[in-house]
Amino acid sequence: MTFDNKDFDLLRKDLEHASHAPGYIYSSPEVLKREIEEYFMRDWLYVGRVEEIPNPGDYLAMRIVDEPILLARAADGTIGAFYNMCLHRGVEIAQGSGNTRTFKCPYHGWAYDLKGNLRGAAHMEDAAGFTPRNCKLREVRFDTWKGNMFVSFAKEGPGLLEQIGALDQDFAFLQMENCRLGNKVVMELGCNWKLVHENVMDFYHVPVLHAKTLGTYFEWKDEDVKLNANGGMSIWYENGTQTPDGKTLFARMPWLKDRDPTFACTGFMPPNFSLFGRIDNARVVVAWPISESRSLVIFYQLFPEEVFAMPDFTERLEVYREYSKVVIGEDQSMIESMQKAMGSRNFVPGRMCTQEKPLHHFLNGYARRIFPIHEERA
Ligand code: FES
Image: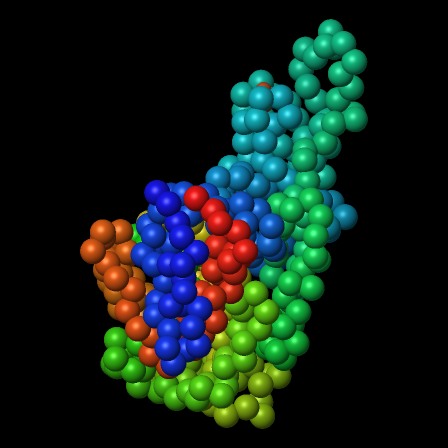
């Protein structure tokens, strides 16, 4: 398949004259490979909350963009991120999550401590020049922002704070570091990873598709969309919280006491971090590509520490969880239908609505990264 930079000419026009992006950016395996190299192997990526591994010995293993990684909290409380590949033949030394003092490779038994140091390698005495104590799992760059964990596969480059700077400036007041994970919903969707993020920044569809759910309490103005570097953005608007009547079942976050009850905000940092603020909670949405037409989507919903002590906390939390599932279900059928169109040889990108300012900005940032105009790529 050949790609032509001219395919993006209509997207590159100003919003009033622009059209959407070519379907192949959502349906081509070659494009996904390019995105993985240009985006996912270079940028900081969201991988979870620090409270998912709160104690020494806690670990979390995951496969992201075909790279197995392992996050582990050592005895001194620090968190390290490693390639989850045994130094012998590459088998994953840990699966899922849990607590341990040692990682033992299930294949030939090489053992590692929580900082990734090789502590034992059976029958390797005769391997000339091999010194286990000098061996360590390869590290992945790791950093945190407001209780959120990020990794970068790039050996060097900008630090996390440099990449997340605009969101740090705009949304530090949400105090996500003083929140705790309440709901975590993991699901696979039959769509390209970009359609997940595009959907959550697409305010044009909210009053229509979500007329009976979150569209009931929704109000936004074009001037409240702030466009950040690299296709990122910060948006402020009005919305209820994620309950059927839009009213909180808990209380306002203590640091949002002065805000209107319909306060709402959304932030996006490419490639995989969308955040949301409401009067009583903060939320993160992450989308990982499984293939060009399939994504693993994870929703993290955070609440201030004190509400976890409420006697009926679990029941109330369940209301938020179920409500989110209803809204996600409404979106799922739309974005999976869109995905089918993106793979059709007869799809022609349509004109953009001026209410699609966030998408226009994201897709233009994307095109600059993945289909740079100065370079003819085939
Ligand atoms: Fe791990 Fe052999 S692959 S010990």
